[in-house]
Length: 169
Image (cartoon, rainbow, N blue to C red; front, side):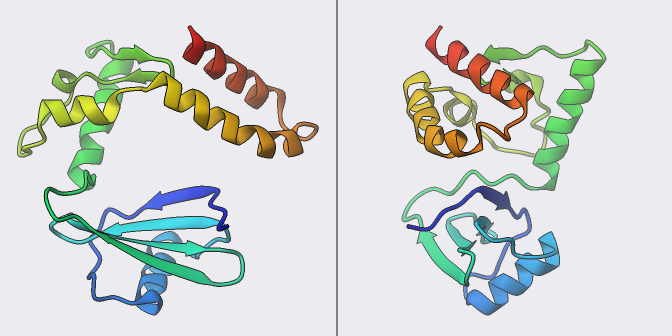
């Protein structure tokens, strides 16, 4: 089994003809290095193909996925700026948020969508929080966290307990 502890998202498109060496070179260029047990995601310009490079601690794996219809939701620089603008407006008290078990998230209308055709129904689908699915995800973390229990900082333990309680409520 390949263990992945972190996933990094590259916002610049990758030529899908690239093999593992070219993808690894892009990871090093964009992220500084390929870290063990980290995955690096890339999409093509049309966002209908994706590649993931995973460093398993010994070497790298490269996998590809192609959609027959539609495209992956893939944020670009402008999309990141939309969220940063919302965060600043939240701090200034000019924007609201929807509270979820995972934290506060923007409503569709809180983001500046000018120049984008991102549909409201797609936004709601990707920002919805499935409590049952997240409860199952937390159970998967139990084995790892039990190994870290004695060295895990108290604030991290408390945050996990609050998240678990919020998902049950």
